[in-house]
Image (cartoon, rainbow, N blue to C red; front, side):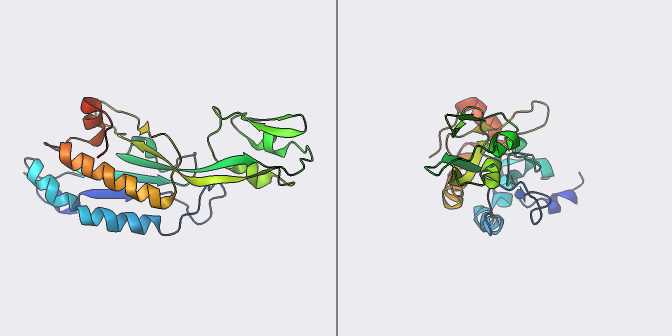
Length: 209
């Protein structure tokens, strides 16, 4: 067996947006989240954990993967990671006068905004919380509500690919770290032979400790 590649496997891998400094689509700016996640995951010692669970050399596909995307465009492919984070900004209709410019409706790629009775109306079931309608609003009729992350769990590729299952709600960075901590502990409890988190969820469901 070629054990040389096993030395490259550290047990977890965190990816993020490719152009974090210049992207105009950011729904959230969370400085330091990547570093905090690295600290958290390093403490989990998943390399040592996986060595005990897997026969033969570790491979890159054995790693627990977290992907961070700062907007719903999801360039870092959070949908197929063990845990995927998607930046979210909930638009909120304020009491400010709306000048009916229509920029919010024109900007929305999901057709989730319309102007009714001189007020913007948000169709919640269509909204992806990108926050771009708030950015173009000139009158302040729209403002930012909660800003945080949508969290998807259990995504993977392989012979039986699976898109991540979204947890209900939007979570600020502190809440996000706590949920990831619980997800990894759940994974360590139920991973017996190197199964991916998605495989575990398919067997027993999402039941975080």
